[in-house]
Length: 195
Image 1 (cartoon, rainbow, N blue to C red):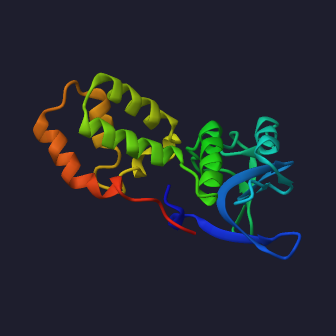
Image 2 (image 1 turned 90 degrees about the vertical axis):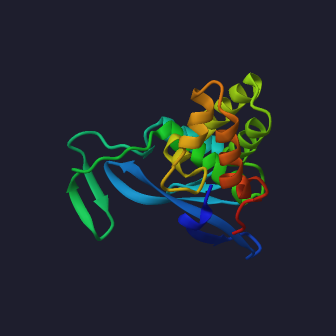
Image 3 (image 1 turned 180 degrees about the horizontal axis):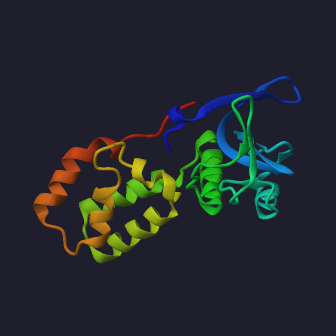
């Protein structure tokens, strides 16, 4: 997960300590739909016009309070930029957004994310291209939010093709494996981004 691409935020805790966070765009359904930043903090709390923990946030999503896609013909407000009938496409599924929120909390807390697990599984597969490692890579790849899978290798040209190629092609040629090791090896020692 590349937190450099997300909006960094903070709030003050009870003792005036700074609690770091990341803002992710979504919609709040409060009579109309309002484009907002869902504020995710390192202490696990999430601000979606109310400060809740992850389980409380899931309930907000299940109730339709937080959404990532808009119904046809709905009114939407993008603060000071636009108000009216929505006429744009949204592509992030709310279940995938929940995975992203959970990963964001893990990242802020210094824990492993689905991205970290997938890159590790990719390295394991390239080191030992066994069927069990291929199955593990597929499992870890599918755990990454779908809308973020194309950024796993930090390669906008290849997107996630090398990982999908490893999952879908049996067996890979040694030349292909070595090419991927050479090209993406820098990711295997990478320990994520700090705030």
